[in-house]
Length: 498
Image (tube, rainbow, N blue to C red; front, side, top):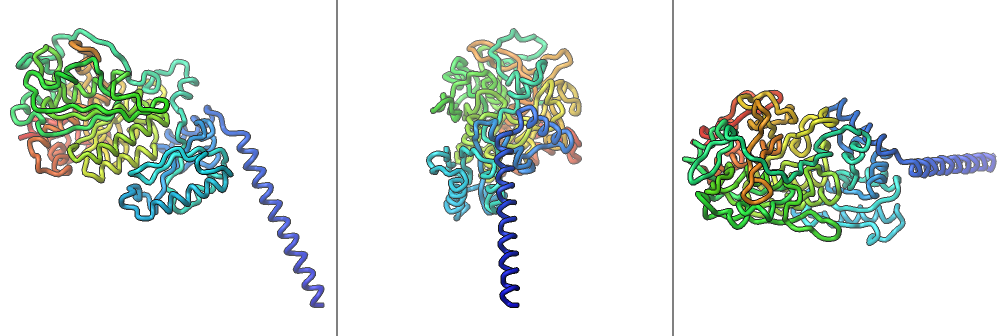
């Protein structure tokens, strides 16, 4: 009898084992079939757009393994991985087990991919718990996401805007125009006033009481970090003539963190956007009859971190991350401004922003500018982060009427008047020497507000970041009650520096 029972038990385990193997084989076959048929770019974008429309945001952590792997497959198999013991364990210097955690992640990838580490590891960040790798298999992605030390797994090079543009023949957005342009324009006399020694003060500055604030502060002693497309080598007022007219005793430094090919392609603007942001922020109070910047005596450190304002390529996202960590580690920098972004979060950039914030930096980011298929998006990333101050542009004489191409939403902190009734925007230096142009959108609103922060902090150099922010809030339209879509509104800069 005992032998019969033992036989039946043995038969049960054998059959059960066979069934488990069949299930495992079927699961592996299913994974293999999925991997042979990744979603198309059109299908991936449709899911992203649907999620944003239904929930207000999109994050890869909430995507299915198949959607995530499909985007990785369509994005040159490049993957960005953040690891750590918690969502806030991003700083290697504060993460004692970071080397072991990274080794575990790399070991798992090697196990599932079946290739040596040198074949798949492309970058390991020296300051952040973040690595970039190449992954072929969906099963590797699934296994990674189950690890307790994984904070995020994201496509490293998925070109959302490029795909969206190909699907929308008439699309015009920040993805298609990319914020670039080298134009120069004769300024309308109604759009500026003249101040000594012979500089032009943009109409928007007067609306915010900036010229009167200059009696109290010009930004001296402050250093602003600008993360953008670089600064033109052809504009001497942002170069050899940075100290001219009433501007003196300050410096401008230019760096490049955007890798084009195998090396960075330098600090020089090849787009035009960064030059205009630098101008509205800190152009000298010159004697050449050209526009002046808000903080015309502040120091400026600029980074060419991307080729344009849409941060969707691996090189651009890494360039921005590097710029944030570099500026974070520069003790002279108090303020960081970036008028670029994406419609959904990017883990490595988020880590860079958090790292800079942890070092006490006051960070301003653009709320978003678009004209067509992305106008369903609210405040873009990284302006949507709590660690940043989100800024958008509004029409002249208002604090709750966004400009024609600007975004708004509950995450906006401040507004800046940058669009006139006749459509003209803010006069700034152009890409080329002795020329001027106009610039608009949430981009210029952000750069101008960063300049305002420099005026406030320069007046009160011993203040903390929070004290500076509180003074800006107290000097704005809606204080103490925040507007649901426009934050604290427009800042009266004279009030902010008194």
